[in-house]
Length: 202
Image (cartoon, rainbow, N blue to C red; front, side):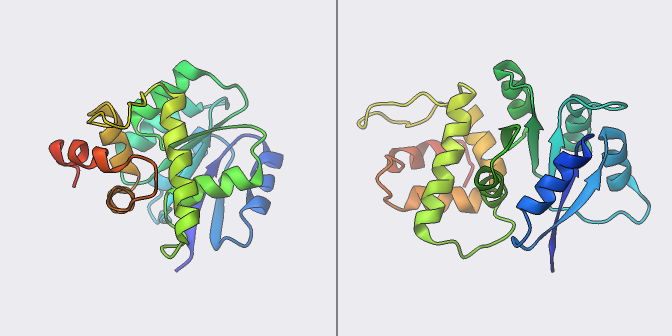
């Protein structure tokens, strides 16, 4: 079954570029020109099933902030990636508190876009170990950018502040995260195991 991603952006050229960048990934792009249309796509009587949502922030009718809030409230199981041409740290933090799994800034490089989609693990469950490590590092960078990660000395435990970081990371893919915690990949993940278990993530 081909996976689908709903791309919500008022710029046709941006939607076309994203569609081109994701070509060959096995992911079908469903387009929506604004938040209103994106909501209509999901709420339709014979609605298609999408595996992820990529949403712009500044749009007419219903903007990205309102649309993302709706998506997270009404469709909490669908991962949301935010795309914006106007980066804002405070807004990024607010989005992540809502459960957004990634925050990308335009223009997005193809590699970063594909990596963000791979983080959701909706395309390939058989990624090579090195690819998984690289992707997981990008997840940690995302939370570090938002001020959610405070790196501790190697002897410190827990490794990450919780429960915010733990809860947010677990929403991305609990099984995926657990795999990294159980593996020794040289990133001090083992001290984090107790933190995740203490808060009942696994």
